Amino acid sequence: QQHQQQQQQQNQFQQQPNPPAQQQTYMVTVPAGIRPGMQFAVDVEGQRMMVTCPANVQAGMNLRILPPPAPTQSTSLDRPPEQQNSVSTPPRPPLMQMFEVVVPAGVRPNQQFSLLANGQRVLVTCPPNVGPGRKIRFQLPISHNDASTVQLSYEKIKDGWTRTIRVTDMKFQWVRMDENGEIDVVTQERFDVKHSAYTRKLHFLEGNDPRMRTGKLSLVTANESSVDSSVERNGREVVGYWEIAAAHQRGSYEEKSAWFQEICIKRLRVEWSEGHMRMNVRRAHLLHDSIDAVMSLGREDMRKIWRFEFIGETGVDAGGLAREWFQLVTEACFDPDMGLWLSSSTNQMAMRINPASEISCPEDHLIYFRFLGRVMGKALFDGQLVSGHMVRHMYKHILGWPITFDDLELADEEYYNSLSSLLKVDDVGAMCLDFTFTEDALGTNKVVELMEGGSNVDVTNENLPEFLQSNLKYHLMDRVKPQLTELLLGFYDVVPEPLLTIFDFQELELLMCGLPTIDIDDWMKYTIYQGEY
Image 1 (cartoon, one colour):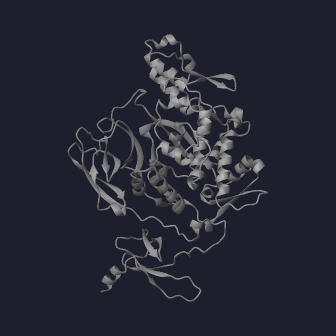
Image 2 (cartoon, one colour):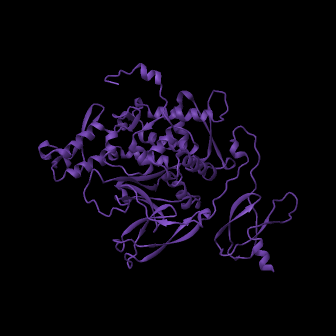
Image 3 (cartoon, helix red, strand yellow):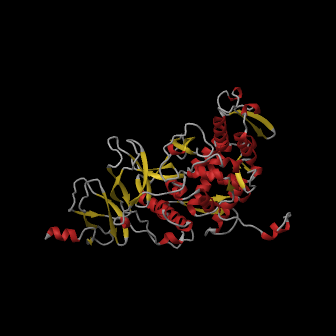
């Protein structure tokens, strides 16, 4: 009878009488299967929390808990409305589902193959002692709601790169699929303008200043990079793989962006009661004051609620001052006169990093890029917009998406066409080219070697692929690697990279910058049309 009563009361609470003016405690029965040190979810008066089973307690035993005090009411104008009566809800621990699949024909031991498990593409490595036709098993975390609807199937997709989950370590990885929807196992030993792709790899390091991480940035072949499939905060998982996988399958941009903002607000943002920031800046010295304020913050401060005040001006920040601050600060950073960014030769509205920013901006130009990265990340985190569209491969770098030879066209169309024309030349050696590129830095020409000793290496038909590869890497990363490193470090001081895996580069640009405003009347007034209608 006692056992039946415990089963009925599992995860249900009986309020225990307490002396007046003392916080109430609750009694909970440790669920079956829970061992010392493991966590389980409980509900107290509508608030979900995680409880860690003590060392001397086992499943079926009663445990007395003291929940944290409920948040106090506040009518302060500084406190956002959604925070006044809200309580952060930790995610439920994921269920683990066992999948069984037959190894496809043609797959060899230790070779990878992809498939769909519960609607999510995963990457499986064939065990050493297993061949085609044999069955293998693996586990994946799944949603509580999807536990009874697990499906497993192969998928026919178009030729190109796709993101999968690597079962061995639960990391997202890029793989290239052939026209039959299978992993392209043909290793491209040499660069190919149609098929080769690269992704940025950012390795985080602890810096001398505990508020700032450092990192090493490199460009690797797309299938060598990976990213975590979960998000942790203070050593505890707050967003699991199954949630991100489910968000991947959301059909519309609106649904994905709404999910992203909900995660940022409810699970990652620091509660008002745990600390918030007041940013006091002078309008006449906006950029200088803003850099001093933002760069003095630690990473945890970047996820706190910010309230802005323009010194000497009356007004309460109910959202309008924040929008104005983000707009003015990003406008100042992207202003070509500042010397940090240049307009793309293809699209005057799209900005690219100025390789000569160190010369154009005599102050510490890298501080500006770390600052801008933090501001862009904070804007995305808070649902604000930035005033500055970037060239396409910049959004790909933020997302860790593959970049290809075609991305060079939007960065420098004239040079892209020049390189592409070499593919049609019978004898490239007759062009008298070598492995160098001439940079124009404020009217001064500087010869840059694309490889060690490149000035002494002539371009021929035999080494043309390596010449094109070197140019891609140099123009899309190496020439601005220090600036790009700081921009990414600042951005990921705020936004966890796994959350961004649900977006493509076009969706990210829309989420960060919104839609541009076009004055149709002005456009028509200053347009000269030639040709037939």
